[in-house]
Image 1 (cartoon, rainbow, N blue to C red):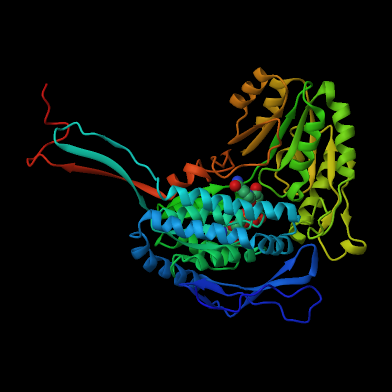
Image 2 (cartoon, rainbow, N blue to C red):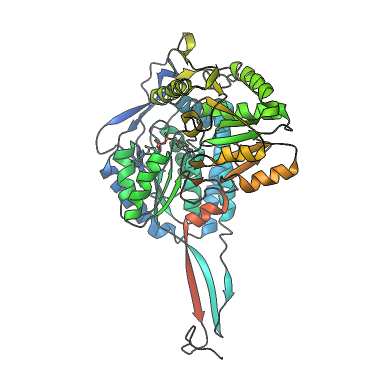
Length: 512
Ligand code: NAD
C-alpha cells in the first residue's frame, strides 16, 4: 500500500489540524480533481472534526474505474483461494484494530461503542466467511445428452463493480460488498456515504495492508450526484451495488439499466414486530426497546412499528414507555450511553417533523418528541426517544420510514389482524413475532411478507452468512450475505467439452 500520513485523528480540544484524507486510486492516496474538500464532523459534538475528505467529481471516478479495469486483467487470474487468503489476513488484522476502528466509527457516526464494535465485528465475520468461500464457489457438473461430452457451469467474475454505501453501518455494509466481490475476482470502486467515509477508509486500508494489489479496491469520496451518478453511468462498470434509500435506489436502478449492469439495491424498511397475548412480555419489551432505539432508530431493520394484541396492549404500552423514558441519551464514546445522536441536522429535522406529523394525525405521543439541546447536548443532534401509541396503521408515521428514534405502537385483534397490519406497507425488509405458540410462529414465518422474520427476537440482528435483503420497495430481489453475494458478484458460464472426435449436434443427434 502506498504510504500516506494516515494516522488517528487528533483528540478533541487538540490544536492539531484535522487529518486530510485523500482518494485511494490505483494504490495511491490522491487529491480530487476539484481541489475541494468537505468536513466529517462528530454528530455528538460538532466541534470535533473527524477528518477532511475529498469532494470528488466525474474525473476522479473515471481515474478510479480505469485503475480498477487495469487491475481486473490480472486479479481475475489470481486463483480464488489465493485471493481469499488475503481476505483472511485482513480479518486477523481487523480483529487487532477492532477497538481503534470502533472508536473512530462512534466519533464519525454517533452510535454507541457497543454497536460500533458490533459493526466492526460484522466486517470481521464477513471476511472470515468469504475467505472460506475462496475454496468453494461451487458450480454444477452435469451429464451431457451426448456421448463422450462433458458439461459443467463455472462462476466467472463480472469486472469492475461500483459500490455506493449509506452511513448507518459504515464498515459492515462496505464489507458485505467489497469482500465477496474481490474473492470472486472482481475489482471495485466504492463511494462511501459523505457522513461516514473514515470507516470505509479503515476497512480498505486494512485490506491494502493485508496485500490486496493496487487498483483492486479504489475509494472515491464525495456526494451522490457528483460521484454516485458518474459511477452508476460509467460504461466500464459492469455491476452496481447500492445500499440506501428507496428514492435513490429508484434513480440508481434506472440509470444502471441503461447499460445493462448487474444492479443490487438494498433499500428502506418500516419493520413490524407483533406481540401476541401469550408472549413473554419482559422479552418483548426488551427486544422492542433494542430494535426501536438501537442505532437511534437509524437501521434499515429498525423496529419502527410494534403491533400489540389487545389483551396485553395496556400493560405493554405502559412498561415500554417507561423503559423508553429511562434510556440514557448521549455521546456514544461514554460506555454508559444507551442511545446516541441523529447522524446530522437534516436527519434530526426529519425526525422532529415526523413528531409533528404524528401529532397532527391524532396519534398519542406518550414520551419524547423534543430535541435535546441543553448542556452537553448543545453541540450534537440529540432528541428524546419518542413513542406514539394508539397509532392507526394508515397514518404516515406508521407507513413511512422515519429513520430516527420514533416508534409507533399499533393495537391488533389477533395474529391474522397483526399480520395484515404488518404487511400493509410498501416495504418488506424485516419482521418479528413474539409468541409461545409454535403453530402461530409457523404461520407468521409463512405469511409475513418480508425478507427476514425473527421469532421471539426484534427485527434487528442479522448474521452474515444468511441472506440479507427485502421484498417490495426494499430492493430488487438480490440478497447480500452468504451465497446471495456470491450469486451477485459472479456470472455463470456453461462449458462443454466434446471428446468424441466428431461433430455431435445437441437436440438433433438422437436415437429415437
Ligand atoms: P441515501 O439514499 O441518501 O444515500 C445512500 C448513498 O447513495 C450515499 O452514499 C449517497 O451519497 C448516495 N447517493 C445519493 N444520491 C445518489 C444518486 N443520485 N446517485 C448515486 N448515488 C447517490 O441513504 P442514507 O441516508 O445514506 O441511508 C439511509 C437509507 O439507507 C435508509 O433508507 C435505510 O433504510 C437504507 N438502508 C438500507 C439497508 C438495507 O440493506 N436494506 C441497510 C442500511 C440502510
